[in-house]
Length: 577
Ligand code: ATP
Ligand code: MG
Image 1: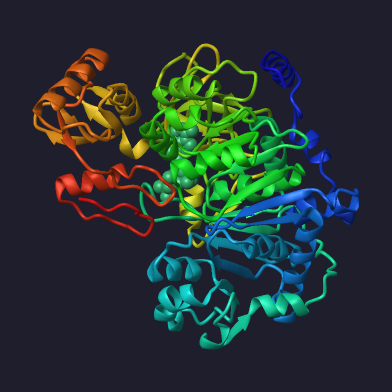
Image 2: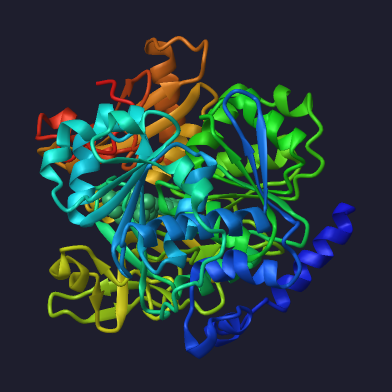
């Protein structure tokens, strides 16, 4: 579609959103007879019933270069078979099925089959070691685990005895005989019937359990209900601009909420084609996928974008990415630098959006047609009431009306994908709500045009000489310096100022990390931010500690700097001190 035409269409969508209320959004879905609602029905069965079974649902790209296509009808068959396997094992409604798998086709069948069977699904990230896997399965009271023989041996066998409630281990691929009590899943699926009568789940029934990223501390198990599909469906269509016939690629692993809400559910409920790449990040591979699979909509994360920026524009110019129409980012603040870079390199900017494991779906976004202000997360979606608030000690919450005042980002509860509990932590759940608001724990500002600007997580904010400094602002300023690839900023104690800003910087390839560079970056930061906010010191690092979902762990930078206990490291990925 020519860009001009495309812009007009996007603007139309903005003035006439797909839905104005959650009731309208719900009416876009089928529902089950008798008022029930089931995510898998909305994702697969209703399309097959409407004659769309031959549409391509998933194109799976294997690490070895082969591909496998699954139509909506194929997905339905596989999901039904998986549901029958669970039923054959006596798995009851509400029981929990966990997975510890890479991005392989059976994972997708397992998610949908579990939901059809009325059980709840919890995906674990495949890189978890024994202890993170055990603790999550214990908290979630796992009854079934779907994994491979190799993962079992390495990650589950050492903790098997500590999981007495885990009754069935379903093994994908070979080697089930070597797993005590292991069921060869591929064979069981071949034998199972392809017909299954979906369990009539209620909208409030538990469907998914997602553990948070562990950026600020021990991960929490957020429980989501089938009703969440109402939000997945319309936010995908609206905030990610899904259109009929689209090929969509969400790069997040289903082990995290993004990879489930938008890497499985939303594209399927919208009957479009989704790409699943089994392999991990590689700039050349990613650009090849965008080109060869003719991706129209791409949803990724700031860490990946920063890595692509490091690789430069040449690989983009060398390819035909003309099918790419909309690009979005989530998970961390998207530095303005990344927005302007992408607009230049791709011809379209990354659209930042904000949400959390707890919110289950996109809440605030730069939707198509909205003018992007680089560095802003955009505006609340229809149905979402967001505010900047101040909590008082007495438990009341006051809205801050004045533009560009920093406060806590809060949402009015009641959207369909809101988490229903933190597993085993009712007090912690209760603490998230006060005075009719859900308090997100993030600090932000709202400008006079209604755009929201992320400041930092409540825990990460630096208090220096009477200023409250958000690390994002400082990191974004550092990112503008052409030697800087990535930055993480913390506060360190100071007898005079209370805290001063310290930056950890990863330099671009080929840049010398000497005194000259340090001085040049510090000088740039002072000009940009002023001396009160600019970092006092900069340490150069080869990489920054990150969660496996790609978030900078500032709490760990700080703990290491101050020699404090490192806390829960179950989601830590790169670990260079
Ligand atoms: P934990 O709660 O265990 O510390 P986490 O908060 O990183 O981990 P997630 O639910 O995966 O776990 O991440 C949500 C958080 O990520 C948000 O609260 C926010 O701090 C950050 N985030 C997500 N999207 C954005 C965005 N577009 N801009 C800024 N921050 C974002
Ligand atoms: Mg969080």
